[in-house]
Image (cartoon, rainbow, N blue to C red; front, side, top):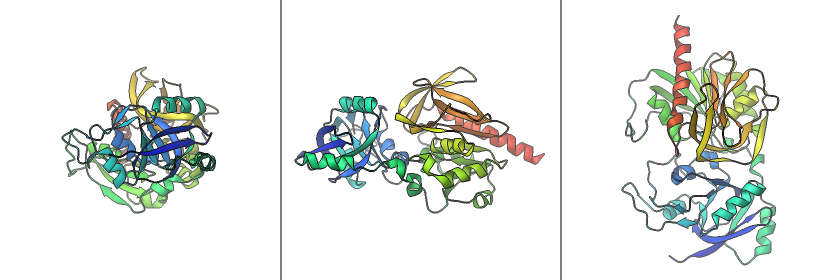
Amino acid sequence: MKKQPGMIVLKDGTIFHGNVIGAKQDIYGEVVFNTATTGYQEILSDKSYRGQIVVFTFPHIGIVGTNDDDQEAVKAYVGGCIMQDCAEAPSNWRSKQSLNEYLCEHNITGLAGVDTRALTTHIRQHGAMPAYITTNVTDVDGAIKKAQLAPEIADADLSGMTSTTKSYRWNTSSWPANDFLTQKDTTYNVVVVDFGVKHEILRQLVNNDAAVTVVPNNSSVADILALKPDGILLSNGPGDPRTCDYGIKLAQELMKTNTPIYGICFGHQLMGLAQEATISQMKFGHHGANHPLLNIDTNEVSISSQNHNYVISDDNLPANISITYRSLFDNTIAGVKYKNSRNISFQGHPEASPGPTENNILFKDFFKEIAEHKAEMEI
């Protein structure tokens, strides 16, 4: 395969060269790095990466190809991707197409042959920043000027661009344990507010005997309560939660009801903002499937999947918020419980797609709150 030169130019003028893979086009995005060693397809199709260019720190990407079952959304949402080596001949019994073919199909631009170790080091030192990928390697000065004009994704309502526009039912469980079996009998009714929800989150809810309805992120409280939910989940999603005024207001109003609420990642941050917690932007975020967390109550350590650039800050933390998890990388807040309520939230991705599955137990915590609330309502 003939290689076409390309380069990524960071907003600070730093340039890294490589070969263009996927769609042959120039793109903007915020460059971040992900330390996961598996699950590149799940990362590429995670809606939380909308507007971002993901640098894979694992050197060889595309080894097992791509398939229909590992999608976390109906299409790829990542803005672009950077890697050291792109496998041209994948080998796996589940593979349907190569990574390059997948990127072309989903109109995603990438660069291979990049010194990802040096690029990751630069991001760690200088922070995540806007960048520009171009196929024109001859006009360096022009590329630098375009990179300096790259838009800040924090200024855009990315979750509003990513959410479903129509409500729908989801009734498929996880693979391989349940082999994507279609749900039949259910115990609970859960409404998911879609700020960029991943398919595996919905599958985990089905695994816990829930009938799942996904609604747009601009739904009203009345519309949501009309579905008679036993529990409500505020999903993950892309961008800065502080720009999502309607999401903050929705979370605030929902948290005044008696219905148990569970927030994941973006939803976790919205719940914090709804209670007047402060949200801080991180230098380069947490992106990977190997992040250790400390359970404050049990003192146990678990390995989690993380994907976020913002956290609930310890500064001026409201008295009604109790910390349940902390990151062992930097001691940032990774989970909370809201006192005098059945509301909980988690900064990471407990569905772990990709990543370790040990934090799936957090869905059990949510359904424990649902079951206890339901029992109280029946008395």
